[in-house]
Amino acid sequence: MVGLLLRLRPTVVVVVAAVVTGLLSGMPLYAPEAAAAAGGPAREGLLNMLGRTFADNRLVSLFIITFPAIGLCERFGLQERAAAWIRRIRAATVGRLQVVYQLFRVLVGALGLRLNGHAAFVRPLVLPMSLGAAEAQAGVADVELLDAKRVEEIKATDAAAENYGNFYGQNLSPVQPGILLVYGALKGLGYEVSLWRMILFTTPIVLTSIVLGALQFLWLDRRRTKASGA
Amino acid sequence: MARAAAVIFSLGTVYLVAGAVLACFAVLTFADRQHPRRWGAGAFWLILGIIFGVGGVLPHWVTGALVIAMVALDAAGQVRPGPAPERKEEQARHARELGDRIFVPVLALPVVTFLFALAFRILGLDANRGALVGLGFGSVLAMLIAMRLTRSDARTLMSEGRRLNELMGSVNILPQLLASLGVIFAAAKVGDFIAGGIVRLVPEGHLFLFVVANCLSVALLVMVLGNTFAAFPVIAAGVLVPLIIRPFGADPALVGILTLSAGASGTLMTPMAANFNIVPAALLGMKSEYSVIRAQVPVALGLLAVHVLLMWSLIRFSR
Image 1 (tube, rainbow over the protein chains, first blue to last red):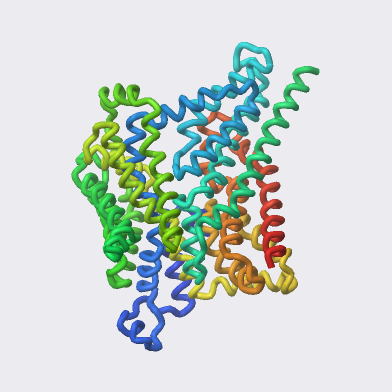
Image 2: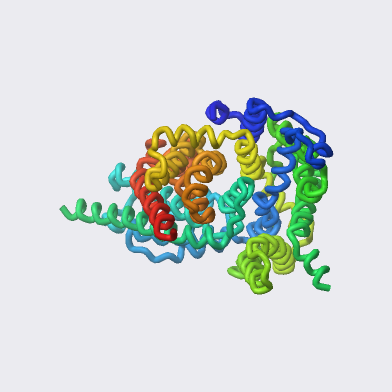
């Protein structure tokens, strides 16, 4: 915890935490495996346990195997085509655009794709489109004429739409690291759970996140229309 | 025959493929003279490839030593991305011709994953395993389709995979390391310590208050750590298993995934999750770096409350 605050490499922090915790609880640093296998009284060594659990949890990092295909598709226009789909969104207001973008982001996550949406979509596409919609709503011809507080709010909620869609949508796919971590961690604690049941139970949460996001975006829309009408 | 199929369509095969993919990344990095740390970074990915490929048969202490070596390379600042391969003019032209067909390989991934899970289920095997094996075979199929569609060779395929992999860097192994940390915490009885602290605050046997404590503590820990992955193993060992799963017989799949996503409420409210909350503020040119967090707080709190109610009612009424 302190390490992360000091901005050390996160991998180092985790391993140091593991070693310190293990040593404090009296685990030996290393124990010959033959003794443990023979059912001897010796406790498993820290190094042995680190190796065993890291190998047992390989499935958590299995998403790396998708990189060659996704990387090649990116080189041949995957992001550009996805962007073209976003541009096709016909939304008259900022709020509706954000609702549709959040849905798009849930879909991307559910397909098992990981991408940095803030850089890939929000900055180049969603923000210009929502500022365009805001100009039309306010009946002005230039971003400079929009209220500064309103622009800040649009930017913040664009980023929020990306985060809501990304965080909750990814749990709908059995190949995303979050759900695999739950599987791996619970397995380590002695519980084998079904990936599909986890997806089932997370579905109401995804729906709630979509509803709450939509309420926020559309409420801000309404507040603005009222303000500009007054 | 059936035995041969069981060997081919196993998690072991998928791990071997993943190990081979990582070895390709490592070789390309070793050969990349423009890479600022080609030996260190290449060694890091090669070691991970070895653990993937043969981690199941290596003595555990050897794997443990290899993990320490990887983390040492990362600590020494060796694990950095190389220069991205340039996009050639013909690739850009071909991309325009392909249009939406570029989605085909990417969609093959979830389709094959799902079909494998379904097939395993029909055969009376573990559908989890089916999904993971399907992810492996789906990736291989996606690679083949992508190469054919884009008329690229294996070298281009692997260089592009390496580009994505190195861009994320050592963060890629963090979830796996954290899952290991969770087991070590459990062995060191850290969980019992946390559970003991909560039991002192909450009257014993009170399901609703334990669910509140669980969801609040994961969200708060995420706010401190900035990362759901880091918080989950601690809370799972310290709160979820001893206070909710064991005494109340709650479904581990249900409470596991809901605890993870309750943690996302914390992510939405903390500047420690800089990638999601602070970097975008700069990227979108906002006046205050806290604007994104401020916008997200009401929704995050609302979702946290929904998590508590959903988890409590599903445990309560499934008993």
